[in-house]
Length: 284
Length: 345
Image (cartoon, rainbow over all chains, first blue to last red; front, side, top):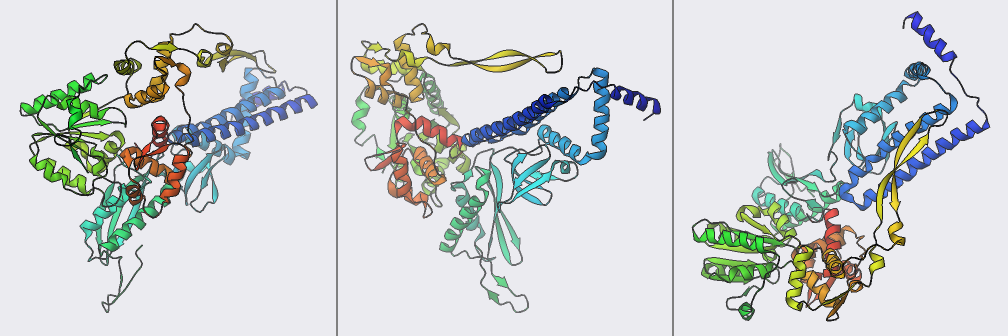
């Protein structure tokens, strides 16, 4: 920054009209912060409650939460700043210039998280309620905060991923804002098993599941692939609510294997190439 | 088992005058497809509707001017004997309640597959009726819509059509009584603007906020016509379904008087587990089902008796002549709940 500009900015700041900070001002600031915090909690609670009652609209409703959070906190910040100073426009610009520089130097990670949060909210690489893989973690997005995104993994652990990682790491969302999500179910059968029947049964096991949604938009596909010692029957179908992902997989697998056994379709077996002997495996 | 109406007991009913209200457009559409068939253009017809919407009345009305064979399925079909009836049937075949050809279980589509196989090789015209949700499900799973290029959906009726339909049975000498005027008042929400002075600044900002108008509760509005209020409420409660509207009307009327208060808007507890919701969805899509068939679909994972007890306790499901059916008063709530939870689509 040229010397003249820096001197000018410093001069502007030294003449900032700071208000007298008394007990009343402190109470006012505390009041603003408490109100903002309570407002965020209440709005989050209400929106989450409503979204759970209307599952089809769960994502659009919950995505209002981070947006409202940021709006409320920035409004609170605005009120707090104006409680401390009463600047004119030039002073305000000068103040935010230096404030920004201070943030950039001292709190750059926090600032990056906040910017990352804004990018997540507006660009929507994922939304609250999505099942995503972010970095090394997979889980349902429970909250998009100002600083971090909270995921709940399948084993019910809560993971906080800093928002700035959105700039450096790939994120994959299994459902991209939809409540339905594609699930892949693999069954491995003995290479001698009748693959046509096995595919047909898996298709029926999937399409008759209580967790499935099937339509032109949510198709069900059954694929077969041969491997040296087994055949893989793969179902790609949509679960009606991503929260039922694992129950869906489990239910389909169990029902399909019951039918396979009735038809003499067996799980793949361990084979030892050097002797050609086999040992029964547990395919289900 | 299917009933062949050309020889079966419902043949007598066909002698009665069938009167059709509200589905004139749908009838024209079906008649046009039928006439096209007579001129050599073959398009099988699927008439799709919710329960109680009057599918049977429509096909009966449609078929009366043509030489047809009618097969009406009454419960889940487990044998393919009906296929032999199709071989000997007239060129125009009416098949009612075709959703009974499939069960949502592994191996439950055999009869439907047989029927579609027959249909794809046949020159005969098939006029079929289906439950809306079964149709959507089977279209996705079995590509039904490819076999029936002409799909006629019976949409909910408006108050005017329901009124015509009901008064055709009861005549015009009905005395309408609005005894619930005060309860009909509605709240209204509008936007107001508050001017807020920003603290520590001379700026004033305008902030919009929702305003709840309670005045309609305290001030009596101009009284609306009792007849209109009654038919509007009947349409709302029945969700535009002629069958349900008729049942509610029959239960509410104290001939020749009908009171607005007698047409109640019931509420139901639809906070269900996934198993209960699944069974409810099956009953909705099949329209009526025997306990044994329901248990087969549910499999060992679901305690059918327990779930049915809960559904009946909440008055969502009723038992009639050995079948489980959706309580007609709860149909609107059941549809809405299951659609929102994507158990039916």
